[in-house]
Amino acid sequence: MAAALQLDRVSKTYGAMRAVEDVSLIIQPGERVALIGASGSGKSTLIRLAAGLILADPHGQGTGAVHSFGVKVQEGGRLASEVRAARRHIGLVFQQFALAGRMSVLTNVLVGALGRISVLRGTLGLFNEDERRTAYAALAEVGIAQHAAKRARELSGGQQQRVAIARALVQGAKLVLADEPIASLDPKSAKRVMDTLVTMSRDHGIALVVSLHQVDYATAYFDRVVAMNAGRVVFDGPASQINAAFLTELYGASAEELILPSQFVVGASVPAEIPVTQTVS
Ligand SMILES: Nc1ncnc2c1ncn2[C@@H]1O[C@H](COP(=O)(O)OP(=O)(O)OP(=O)(O)O)[C@@H](O)[C@H]1O
Image 1 (tube, rainbow, N blue to C red):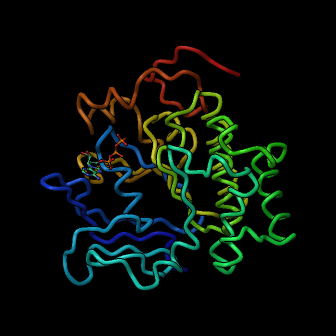
Image 2 (image 1 turned 60 degrees about the vertical axis):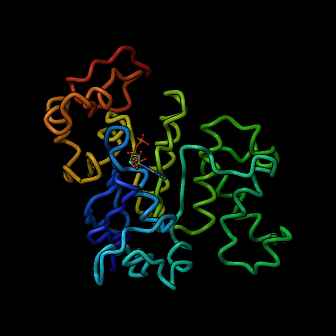
């Protein structure tokens, strides 16, 4: 089967700043990968490139290409003609909860169905009973069905992230790209959102790429970690290899940003070197 995500020699330059430099990456269907790196290392840019939200630098034939499940997203600095088909199976979860705050939670989840229904029906919000049932079931799956009728903005940050996950489920996403989904959340909500993302991936065989600042979450929830520094992939391997000493080797002084004392233990695989200030059962 084609890779869930394949990046071939992708770069992105902003003015004189190389945000992403010559990155090639393959994520298999159903695979879960944490993308780590200090602030400014290129994680968000890489995720946006993967989703076709921004264009890679034009490099010529065969480079700067992004494919998802064999469907081209972009190549050589141009969006592919089939990008809409690719986006249909790519779910997105962002740090800033990208929901329509005034609309109901259920409607926000139904937006996930828009790729499959007519523009007119979607614009008028004419979702049928089946679609509503599916959206409701997705909300139940992420544990917030009781909030279906509320306006999205009335929900907490963690609950809003779970709405975004439910939307990806309704979309029928086969790949979910989550850009710092827990950056604005308290530790308890962060754990809940990570649990929900990983459960969604496992239960539905959805490939998952999550960019994270907090390395302890990466090691607790993922088998594979991709580490970026100054736009480049500097490590791609088992999470078990990641500890404070290794991060210092990779990042020097900026490793501190990634291995700040955890607020709580998120899993047994938190590296022993990371000081833990408080334990929550
Ligand atoms: N739209 C933009 N215009 C100019 N420079 C940008 C833009 N987006 C990102 N950059 C720069 O590209 C580099 C990589 O940024 P990016 O946001 O991808 O990093 P990041 O690892 O996600 O950081 P953070 O963890 O702080 O979100 C940074 O130096 C950033 O300032």
